[in-house]
Length: 231
Image (cartoon, rainbow, N blue to C red; front, side):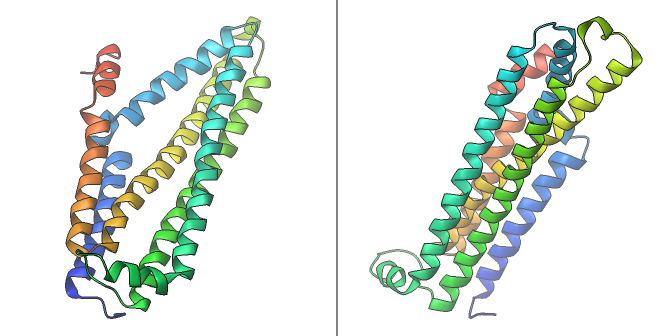
């Protein structure tokens, strides 16, 4: 297919399988519930509960705005990265000549290079959509903060249900943001394919290892787990 070797196809399957397996393990299994991303949902719930108890909620608006700004930065960065990928696609002939002069890697055909570049662009487009949706959800959270019941009604069933709903929207915003970041990390692993299939396999494994350590064996994870009494 497109002149790719069997090892190239194995590397692509390894990449897709690693991404899918990591995402499923993190989002759909009991083991994933121990990850740092999921455990932070407890603090999101606590934030919404504390927000409801405050008469003045300027700090909640500031925190919400900072989350929006961070997400907007990543969304803008993904657009720039997409532009860079399209530039690689447009200048494939010149870049292949440059790669041919390097003392490492496999020199691809023009069609292979364009296929690899298109794959990178697709990953970055996926990341942009995730960041864009996360930004919208953080915007919804800001609206919900502005429309929250007054502190005098904090103990009513309606107010408590409002807090749960706001926390769920906030958790979904965080989940979409995390998926966008995950796509960025795997895009870095994907760059190994431009050198060759074996480096592609190695960089993919490296990305999975780094992300796993941050989720389950980082200092932040240990601190949060200890504070929640779940270590």
